[in-house]
Structure formats: C-alpha cells, structure tokens
Length: 191
Image (cartoon, rainbow, N blue to C red):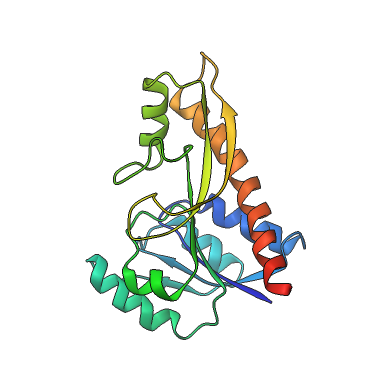
C-alpha cells in the first residue's frame, strides 16, 4: 500500500478529495497521518471522521518544528508527504529525508513565494490583469514555491472573474490534478 502523510493548516478540502478518492477506490493509497500547525483546522475533523490519526505541532520555529516532526514521522512508513494548504515552511531535515509535494494556486513561478497563499494569490493575479491562471504541483525544497514542477493545469480568467470566482476555478482543477499525480506516484512505486 502507498502511504501518505498530509499536512494541512485550514479547512481541508484538498485532504477531503484525497480521502474520497481513496474511499472510492480511485486512489490505491492510505493516509497514515494528518499533521497541522493549527489546532482549529477543520482538516483535523475531516481526518478524525475517517479514523485517520492526527498530530498537532507544538513547536513554533521552523527548526524546532523540523526536529519535532522528524521524531513523529519516524514512527510511520511514509512514501510521500502532501502539503494541502499547509502554511508553514518545511525544514531541511524533512526535505532531505522525505519526498514532499505541494499544490500552489497559481502557475509558478508567477505569484509564488513567501506570503503568497490562498486569496492573496488570486487577488494578485486579478490585479495583474492576467488572462490565465491555474495550479502548480511541485516538489518542496528549501525555498517557498521553488521546487521542481511536477504538473500545471491552466484556467482561463474571464473579465468578470473576482478573486473568489478564480479561487473556485483553481480549487476545482487543483483537486483533479493532485489525484492524477498521486495515482502516478502509486504507479511508480508498483513498478
């Protein structure tokens, strides 16, 4: 079985799409653990509803979080860590030990980097009068939104689009793209 750990800071809609894909048999994997830096993240509730273990980070600095998570994750067999709306920087210990991927709500390298997440990205895209946006799935390295790109999916921006409507379009394709990529990761392990 292909073992995932999902990091999430918020609502967990991307986590839910992974859970749904596993439960429906579309994705041959299991989520071993959901990690959050936010004890109020609804993602934790989504995990608990499906009997997935959860862990809330207690450390504050990137270095301390890195040490804390290295200890916690050593108790699990992990094939891949998926950042699904996780808003903290990943430390070098985890980067050197695990394959980690992230979804970002723009076509990187545009509109990426520190502080560029969620509605901030969509607002910046609309204000820049872009005609195309989308989602990028990439490997995580030591810099925000800088790792090698795995896959990108474009969405058209209409003159009537707002940051909110753009967010809805991007989230829709983000989930499809992520599940397709996860299926590829599972396939690669099987060969």
